[in-house]
Length: 225
Ligand code: NAP
Image (cartoon, rainbow, N blue to C red; front, side, top):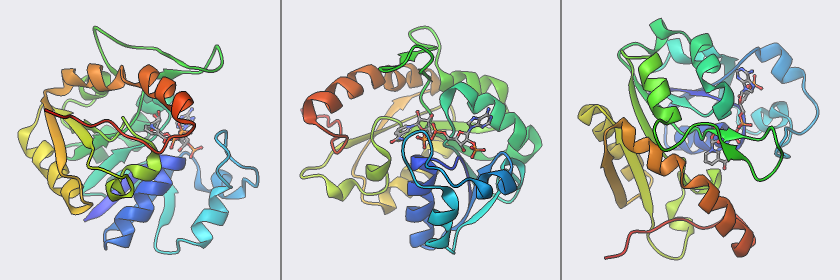
């Protein structure tokens, strides 16, 4: 598949690496490729400048948001939640129309420092906002409940764990489920329509607390019956 990943951070890089490794054609989207390539400092989470990462991943192209979406069969939103709607507008509704959009974003508000709060919750979600803004795109919220490094590497943990999918289109969820299964996900939990993105986005405060007591992000949720 041609896959356009919007976002140059930890998630964009982890997904681009994993997807291109199994043969997908991957383009990473950014606001302005020249500006992004000229950066020499690590990003806000300490990732090295993307130019260094691209040098080790020659199979991945860095392009503008709209080019990444236009060329794609499937698009991934891996941008900072507070600007995801802006990034998707830059990608362009025409370029997103009729496509599956995997939404990995979380509605985190870092304006008061760490830990972040949620800027939407309980009665709405970022996943729903995106779906409402792009009604002709099939939004599937998934993978937002774990650290980037685990998203396509579930076998790295000591036991099977869960990944959730939320979306209004059964066909789009099937496409995403099939894709996730190729990376070894077994416990793929279909929560229902896109409104169920509220629950998985509200896991974030709990995830951050668990990370503190675990001493790191290498863990995941599991459903045990
Ligand atoms: P991030 O630092 O949250 O986002 C980076 C991306 O946001 C960049 O591509 C950047 O564009 C874009 N961006 C920043 N300001 C923008 C603006 N004003 N307009 C348009 N785009 C803008 O990256 P991340 O840590 O990989 O996280 C991506 C998403 O996944 C977030 O929503 C996060 O909550 C969620 N998530 C992250 C993890 C994780 O392990 N990090 C796990 C689960 C979910 P440029 O490339 O142009 O700079």
